Length: 340
Ligand code: PHE
Image 1 (cartoon, rainbow, N blue to C red):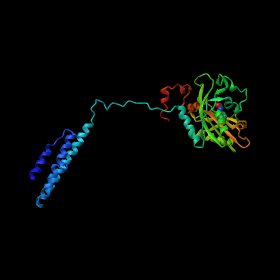
Image 2: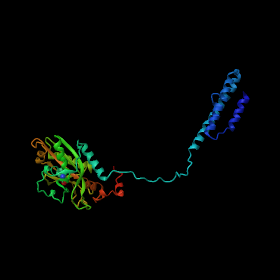
Image 3: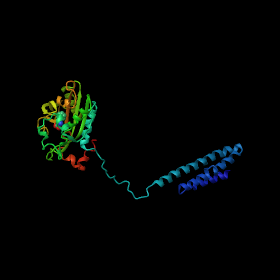
Image 4: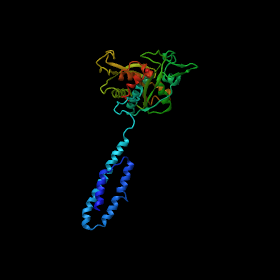
């Protein structure tokens, strides 16, 4: 027994394996079920008690040393096999890649939708190629209104009754024709006007419009809603101001200014030193419009408001050339990737 144990202690000092396969052979030879160690343990059982005392500890030591050798060697071989064989330089700085981003118009549209979603407005969308009824007549435009003029409106050549919608107010009509009050929607969309393209005007742009029709909807509700909106989109200290205006489809009508968000109302070149900037048109839905959609104007009232998304984007992100929004210049668009 003694010689056998000593021999294995000697062997351990010389043990080596050049790969995992060889190591496994060694393990099986010494520690496997039918291995050398198990044979020794079998022999050990037959020894008289006084010898058991001596060899028990030695056998356990032997087993531990073998196990240690196998474990450390295994780790060493495994980490070697994972080491790179190619000549890739892992210390080289990574190449930057550009993540995609939402278009600034989409960013602002989503922000506005979310603000109104919080106070119960659903989102609606409708067609861009409209008929005269939904774009003008039902909205109480008189037949000779200048907006119908060829200069503002794109008419479809073969049928002057069909137009590219000039505003999202056409969706007011489509909603009120379809649904009974209470009606509460926000509707974003693209609109078209026959204008010369410059930094300040374009043949198409985006609007968001809101409509709320129910019992007892008042001008105070409109004002309250718009103040909530302005303070949510801009600063919580933003002030609003309503100036009388005219739209055929609202009565009374107003235009809303907000305190200039660039100078905080003190006056700057952006607000032309007035401290105020105009952001939307609004008013109480004209009774004729309700009637045109089959809604009893004695029972129901409503308000509507509409704004240009490009204008708001200009105010929020200082983009002051409308053409940038449709040129798809990656250098322009990429600046908004941190915002969406
Ligand atoms: N449709 C109007 C425009 O394009 C905006 C507006 C919408 C005004 C709703 C009042 C109510 O200028």
